[in-house]
Image (cartoon, rainbow, N blue to C red; front, side):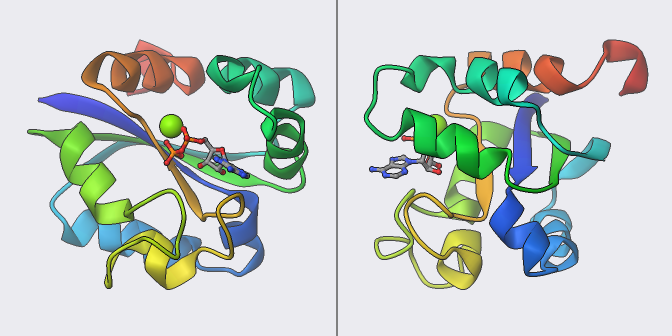
Length: 136
Ligand code: ADP
Ligand code: MG
């Protein structure tokens, strides 16, 4: 079983669609093995998105991700990383396929409703960023 991390981002929590997004994830066959709502600190957001620190959107992304509460969800399923990326759709909602989470709920390329891990290795690392093994 693979693990992957979902973060329901501040734009989606503000719109009160965290329940709808969680239901889509469950309906797609994922097991939720951990879930918490939290307000990220700047330090946490900077660290989580460290791979993007040289990108022009990094500071705006950190501001956005700390603009309100998020819901972090640890997911488990066979082929979880790729299946979850298919469920959420492309980074830019204008390019996301019909029926995907981002197509349905994202506002823009930045405010795109959800995070998803990009590799099996990062799935493990990112779940570990928010959850101790004893919580899962
Ligand atoms: P993904 O979340 O699909 O894996 P990336 O890892 O490339 O996408 O980017 C991380 C996050 O940074 C995106 O989900 C989005 O919120 C933001 N982002 C990415 N590219 C841009 C951009 N060109 N302009 C503004 N925000 C962006
Ligand atoms: Mg990414």
